[in-house]
Length: 203
Figure 1 (cartoon, one colour):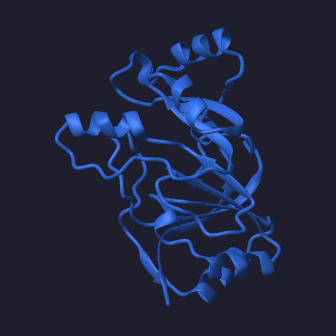
Figure 2: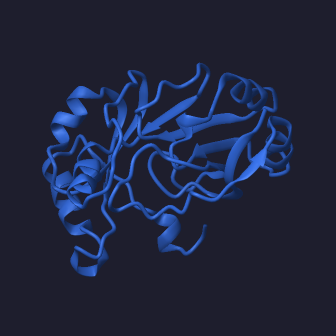
């Protein structure tokens, strides 16, 4: 048995609730959606067995692991979750929510891509089913593009709600940070998520 792993690295969590937390990042290759603003190069991969993954991630001092992609729900299974827990890891997943996840994940960060995929369709790209299938979400993190985020939030109950500016050359200065901040100030049940790893130039 093997997984298609794009990369494993050690850094600080740059976004959302755990911003600033030292974490091991396990990035799986592949995604079922094609969002117009995606800046993650996740297509390349190395085949790795569960044991090889555990050996590599356990070499780092932190026991907080962020499983991401692409869409990690395409590959993550109960076996790897159990093996990570056996090594003492707190498991956080960053998912678009379109796949049912295995039991035992400690923290679910859902970043739905409903509107983003509609934009991709307009650009002639094929996009899969964007329906969010999760019901237990710790952290809802929405990339803000002026869409109706209240409808998204009401349909996806979570413990914490974050809006993240969209990085795109469509916006002056490369992102719509000012618009996102303005929206949050008017709707204070949201919190701001910035890609701080990019701001301080770390991976």
